[in-house]
Image (cartoon, rainbow, N blue to C red; front, side, top):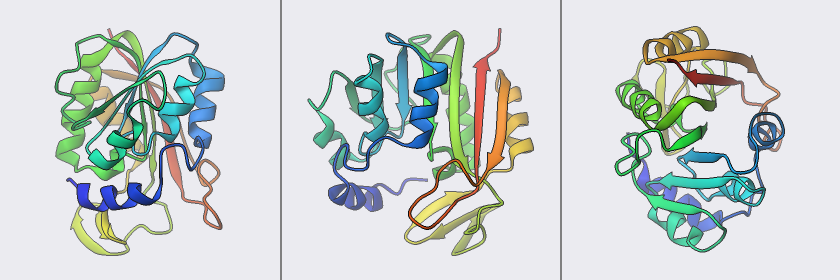
Length: 208
């Protein structure tokens, strides 16, 4: 799935850093990473979390297909920003990252794309590398709204979302060569204005 036109228009209005870092990024920084870690931000958008990580000493690469956002991000911080497909990760070297970070991006792609993503994330992570994921759950209030596209997937408010079932996602991560070390579902993870979307947070480690 590719909603590039939608996101280009969105990021024309939401400039780099304008939203501040997400609660998920703060959680990951405070508990799971350290200065010098090489982190790949999958679907970095306007760079809100990439800029946060870079400002705290992480070695950041952000990738997104929205060229409007990537152009704006060039030179904004000591970080590398790439206009490209965060599913395919073309040009990313094997074993070159300590962490991959995915906030609200797994639900923006189809199940088939997710399979490619998991394979490529495993490829670019070093031995023991960590994969941090935050994504909308099937128990979210907007599940089922809009035009149905595939199982648990809908186009609503102009763009595609595929809502995730936690147990099934854990199984897919395991099949792709990851050990899931943390998984939780809550409406407290990503409050936005007067809404509390139900989200999953998952941490997976590249298995031997």
